[in-house]
Image (cartoon, rainbow, N blue to C red):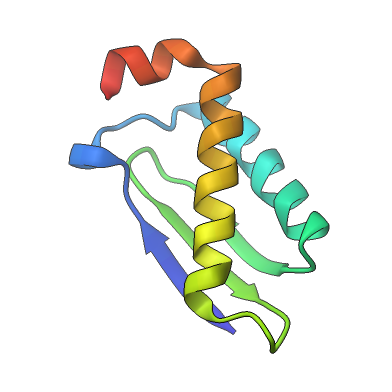
Length: 87
């Protein structure tokens, strides 16, 4: 099991209620697709906490790379105004 915490660039307060719910659904979908068991997921306004359990053949950095890259691409595809406004 791994505990990950990551923050958006400049620790911007990006994840309001609408965005956090969308991001949660994206992350859970990624976990299902890649056989990553997401035990706990919390998204306050300025960071993300996650406790995950991956398959043994995946390193923690691989798990994080998969989740961060795919979730960012899908999130910014849905909300391009967030990328323009905050980043």
